Image (cartoon, rainbow, N blue to C red; front, top):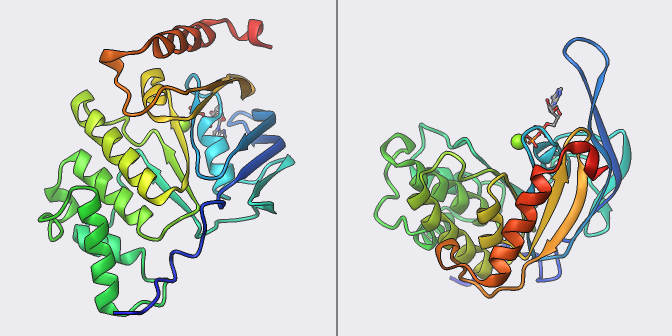
Length: 269
Ligand SMILES: Nc1ncnc2c1ncn2[C@@H]1O[C@H](COP(=O)(O)OP(=O)(O)O)[C@@H](O)[C@H]1O
Ligand SMILES: [Mg+2]
């Protein structure tokens, strides 16, 4: 089988994101507007793993959805590898908290579906999908339907389905928020393995400080109302990292971030 896999078109330099002076307003339900993001600036290096942390309602999902091209801003620009985002881009993959799997397709069917847009033969598509499921530890479960899989397994299918098309960027909006602590630890390990193998840029939204510190190269802390980035934390501790065997850096970062999140909104402005 010498057929080239058209999905692996990007190199390790791909997936840089530049958010510049970006604002978004929504219509408020009772009239007027809600400023969800105000003059937000953010640079994300290609291939890095970056988290957004902030209180509920501060605009994390809004920013993520804007990067994904699902929303339009009122001012500013978002660029992916220097090109302005102006709609949904197939090179950007998304994993949400809700399992957006097709319930009528098996795990394998779900992963194969995301390869439909590539010019692959049926056999190669199957092989790629099987390999992706193996990568997330689901070998032997490929013929199960989502309803027959645990929450963690469904998110692993969602991850395989996204990574199999080799996106430049992976957007994850509280993807493990519905999982128990034990399952979440396993998911962190799998996600980091897959990320290291594929090197997409990951933008990961969470309100769990430890989760951000375990996973990311950088954590951007957001303030609420209107949302913007108030501080960026570089995380240098080698992976794998463990919250229960935290290093000094981990503890310091955790205390610092929790302190920032506790501050009354006015103090951060
Ligand atoms: N489609 C929408 N219409 C109106 N208001 C919205 C919409 N989406 C988000 N908002 C508002 O924008 C703010 C930021 O929301 P969101 O990005 O979902 O926050 P987070 O993900 O940090 O919890 C909130 O005040 C929210 O109510
Ligand atoms: Mg959200």
